[in-house]
Length: 203
Length: 310
Image (cartoon, rainbow over all chains, first blue to last red; front, side, top):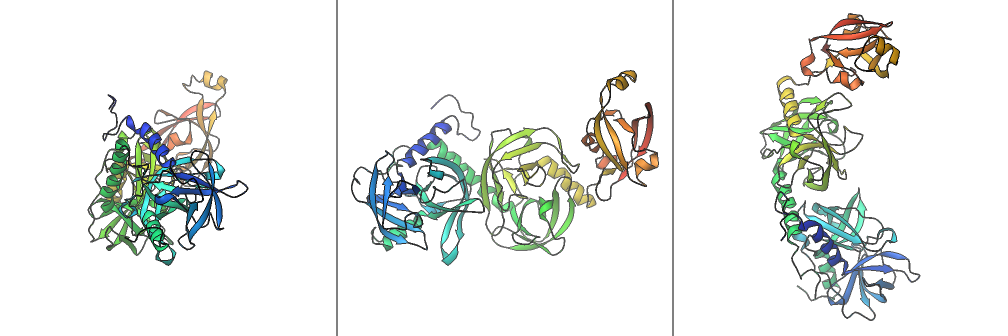
């Protein structure tokens, strides 16, 4: 605790440092998905069990290469795909040991105004962070599917990357931009997707 | 092992919770107004039964309905609108809702974290930003007076205009609009909203003074200013005089140079607009005019403006 405490509601000088810690923490579980010729396709999140979650529109083919935060590029295989929910699960062919899985947050508990961090590789630039808030916690989309709507700046290359809460818990997978707002697949939907693909124990 | 479980991010989590609490606290006073096509606009329940919104979002003056938190709706009557400050006031026919907890917009400083809360439909929305600039009294391009000019660094999404700017404690500190500063996001401070709302509730309109002049700022030649011992080189040249206007009736002519208005120096046409507030109607103003190199004084009786112009 420092002697500086200018924040009017009790959050003072720790804030800038904590933002950096948050970015670093979420970054440890964020990967880049690249094509065989090295072109960036999007981002992904290391989930429990060494599985990488990304958008289906990022990895339509059966194979992809995953660049880990440390820089290693590993081949991976698509083991589950849900086109309409726009989710894909990848299994690394080797080197899965030592991966740091993201902690999944509870997307159902999100409230508008809550801080969120998006991490990805917009326009091919590695690991960029943008900060914003939940705009609407749950908006209905086609087929009764629900989305998190966030006031946070995304660009191509953010697709498949994490939307994390203020504690670094991944609450959504950034998927698209509509009317200037980010739409993310809720973490609950990711859990359902993994259970449906029998990649996670049934709840 | 997961990445997030190591140490707590206390300050960040506290700020995040404060912001979400602030939105939750403001939400019962944020309403959706159905007075245009496509999407409803946002409004703020300012006191019991009275809603304030951004005037430019109101496209229909009749059969307006207002949706409150929880989904109930109430019909509303347009009490009045003031395009000069981009504010409109509606009176609800019944309907509950909780009036906004008002804060002090003047206390906002550049860098303060703020949230814009709107309701462009059933749910409230939150947008994140900071105060990017805050300065003193500001005259809008339509001649209205804002007690402070508060600009926001924030993305403008559906429902921004007419919604509330909320500080991290959940107090409403202004009504947002993108319609006053070239599509830039600004907030109209609480004191200005209070003043305009009272005026609209009392009279149904905000009166504006009217002279009937078109003017342009000029810089006088040093020789002229020196010979006449003028305190300032700046003045306004009359480019047009509307027929049967107060200025025309007083004998003001095209080509006259306005040096001062009620002893107030004139540098920009906005300086004259500043003298045409609600209280100016009926006032006999003394205009110091330069005509054919000779200074003279002209008395102009300010009338109430109907339609646009100064």
